[in-house]
Amino acid sequence: MTQLDSARAGRITDEMGAVAAAEGRTPEFIREGAAAGRIVVTRNCARRVAAPIGIGAGLRTKVNANIGTSRDEHDLDAEIEKARVSVSAGADTLMDLSTGGSLAGIRSAVMESASVPLGTVPIYQAAVRAADRGASFCETTPDEWFAVVEEQAREGVDFMTVHCGVTLESKRRADAAGRVLGVVSRGGALTLEWMRFNGRENPFFSQYDRLMEVFHEYDVAISLGDGFRPGAGADATDRAQVQELIILGELCERAWKAGVQVMIEGPGHVPINQIAANVQLEKCLCRGAPFYVLGPLVTDSAPGYDHISAAIGGAVAGAAGADFLCYVTASEHLRLPSVEDVREGVVAARIAAHAADVAKGIPGAAERDAEMSRRRRALDWEGMFAAALDPARARALRSSSRPSEDDVCTMCGPLCAIKMQEQVK
Image (tube, rainbow, N blue to C red; front, side, top):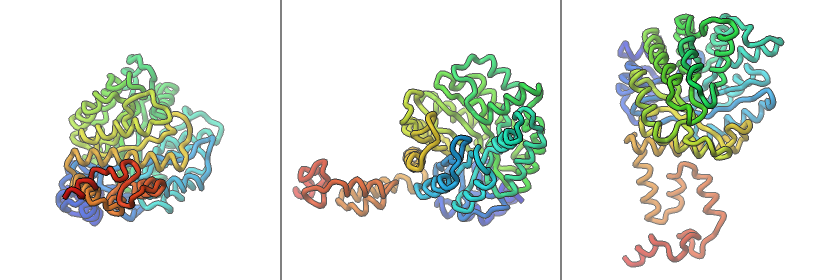
């Protein structure tokens, strides 16, 4: 039985109990949310992660870190270090988006080195295999696509992004949309290329029931990918994006009927005044399924600082009800991220997620901020570091500049407002 099957049968699994303990919720709260499709409990039955993650309504907003090689750079040791740093910085999950080197070997090494849920985009491996034999991706067969999905499920991948909403109908609307930047999803672009060349429907859509059989067998959560996500603010919330979301809502319900857990992926580049509307659309059209957003980036004009743009959008999206933030690094649109880019990207996304949790009233979020304030009032530096989202960074900055008096900082020194209040008392 999958987690969804168990929840519907009234059974609280060990994984649901672990999520409840981590979230400060009752096991029944988790079971009810999972049964309704509002909560996903990540668990591939072929791989027992140390701590299963709950994603969805009423739970702490989660953060994903993307890692992975490219054809130009495929250093396995570097990717393992990125995985390690991501987890140590607080990432809840990892996605391996590798397209260079031994993809199976990279996945295996990542799963061995990081005991957090792992996601993938299986169509990437189908494309790489075609290229390795000197063929075009357009020459691949649906059987090859499904073979990769089953292979990765058997290896223990916990969730997969599959672009099932890229259909002939959504393609028609996208072609007529007159977008500034067209299609920026790599998986979406591959699927469209195959459909145009072969003049056929997307196999992951036309054979969706076949896909559900594999996901159900291994209890892999499907992350319904947004192939038409906007890559420019000017393209946000257009007919192509919304048409795909309508299709994803229908596929979401079909997955639930098949006993498969579902997340819905979302944009992308979205002006800040449209973010809440995007979240509301997803929650309505997809019946409350967890929403997994990339950023969203609130401006297109900040290369080198896209982790900041994404954190702004992530905080707004999370406060509006998004459940899962995919980090963005400073290297977005520019290069494969470095280890330090990855660390900063995770922390930026965690700040956004925490800000959203305070707004949503998630247990423990506002209490953490209150604890920081109490420690500041007491000029308790060790207590401040303990309450910080990134204690190492806070401690390093404090240590880099010594004040004239040990209990204050060099910004105010003896003119510290808090210290003066205590002296007046």
